[in-house]
Image 1 (cartoon, protein in one colour):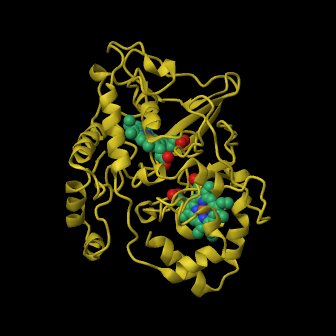
Image 2 (cartoon, protein in one colour; image 1 turned 45 degrees about the vertical axis):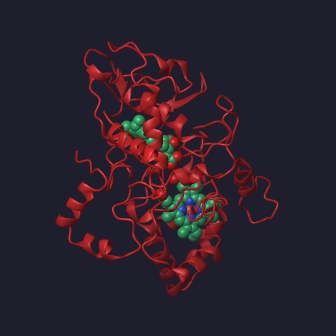
Length: 361
Ligand code: HEC
Ligand code: HEC
């Protein structure tokens, strides 16, 4: 599989793909996506570079891979069109809900030589998810807990049928979660500690699950130093927020008018302009029900997907089920069904304006 490191790889891809030259010529586009924010200090930039190297590093059994894992590197699942982007749709991660133990987490589907595949526990529920893009994620860390709570309307006080709520993880810090597709973790660093252990089998002491702090392969634990998790965090949190390719004020007005902006809030908080999310989890209807209860997020409840960098995705939703933007809108059910219906009742010109707005994000 090809992994494009931001910069060189994408520039090379643009030499091969004629379409890139048009995008690259536009003055206000961050191309390629996944580069560092302009305001990083020299020390933060150095940590960003080390983090990028750690992100693309391919682990082997001799360096701690496994014993059970999904992929040898972070970049295997977050790589399109550059490191930090969406994962290939051929790799879907199995998330397991074991009702008997209340466990929710990754069920790795690969193992090192001499081991057996992990069994699915009796009655266990499996949901399959595609690696989401990580560009600009640091922006969401700027949203305060109070802003998040104010964004959600759990009792539907305004009577518009939209009642998102925060997902609180009582085993961590008791703060509302922002990261993960059901918003189960409040910090990027905690998420990464878990991802290293859960996806690659690299033990570390940052994740708070004692089972993931030790494994029984031949490499002594912890297999990654805390500094590696810190560098990965500096990289993920330090990626620039993708800027829209162009302003589309007409389309934005339609987006607000039909109620998309109720959940995809242009500003998630004072320091998070252009996020297009409220960070709340919302019921998306029965077709989105995985049956997985993730803390206080039910199986049909998903975090409003941030829409910055949307043009760098090729398929949409947590499992990539929508292949283009009109179908993504049409599939919005549950609390979002009203806005999808209002969209479908629009005239052609307004629908096109809204689609142009989305395609430029
Ligand atoms: C096998 C594929 C795979 C690998 C390897 C992988 N991830 Fe992910 N990543 C995913 C999936 C799938 C999700 C969504 C998980 C969920 O919430 O259900 C995700 C979510 C994330 C998120 C949260 C995104 C958000 O929008 O909140 C971060 C941050 C992240 N990964 C970073 C990493 C890092 C760093 C590594 C390497 C240590 C890594 N991932 C390795 C598949 C992968
Ligand atoms: C009730 C809240 C809500 C409303 C209203 C809403 N959405 Fe969403 N939207 C979501 C959630 C939640 C997801 C993520 C679901 C998933 O990943 O399975 C999402 C995902 C998307 C995606 C896919 C993003 C990605 O990264 O895959 C697009 C595009 C989108 N919405 C556009 C719209 C548009 C356009 C409207 C208005 C017509 C709208 N949404 C109204 C909650 C909402």
